[in-house]
Image (cartoon, rainbow, N blue to C red):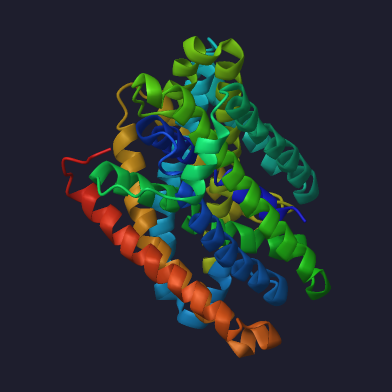
Length: 400
């Protein structure tokens, strides 16, 4: 237990929280229903990846390189490097914004945060870091507290969750796709499988690993649910439109009091810092696996220099970008979203092909019914991702 809960929860990083906050502020409870199919899709995909990690003892990038060649792997890794850099920048931006809400300068807290997480990963063991991350995941429940403080009308919330009223509005459609896109990301698949391989989970522990994934995916979307409920209850009826999660924290203060605002800001800070730990780690894992280099948190700079330097440079450069006045943060975040959208279908297709490879998986290949669900999930994601990329590259009147 551990990798599934950590991976799924930390997917609710600064970008994810922003998406859910904007969804609640713009459409109230109208997009809550999207969390049900998204959770099912997330569980299906993460369970497959976890199963591969347990049975093969290898990371996803390692398996793609071995089965589909270095060239294919190189292009996927290059795209993921760009996407993950933008995601890490977004997380440091969320950390900076949440600190400034609390009255602390980003010029102090961004370097402090970057050095702290660098020290944690480069000096700590896998088991120690896993315990820290699991404890930090508990702070996400601050969003549940915020949702309760908001005092929504629960009968209306439940009705909107179970009986969707779909709107053929461009902003509504784009936000629906964004919720799916921010919940199911390429880096998650690589990090989960790599962390399971490094932890050394065996076949006999597969059922516990599967439970770990199901719990993690369920918790992450419960948190998403309460973020939308909070903003849908307090911001939407008052016509308050936001573009960042930090704006939601500030807007809550006059409506729900200092406590709700502070809880929202602290939870954003926690999520941003956790994202800034895990996304660079995922980057280091899959690049090293793809190139056949040593990788792992338990390794030292001497044992795995490439792994440690990729992690170090990703954090350092992302933090520097945040401190540059007038840096094109929005451009970087949009670019990372587009690249993630382009890569996700390829990553999922390779994952499904690998999970059905009997030479690799033996009796643990997907059963026929499971394949229908997983391929159906991929087709839906490809269609929705294509629509989102087109609307991002060719802005329309429904630009979010």
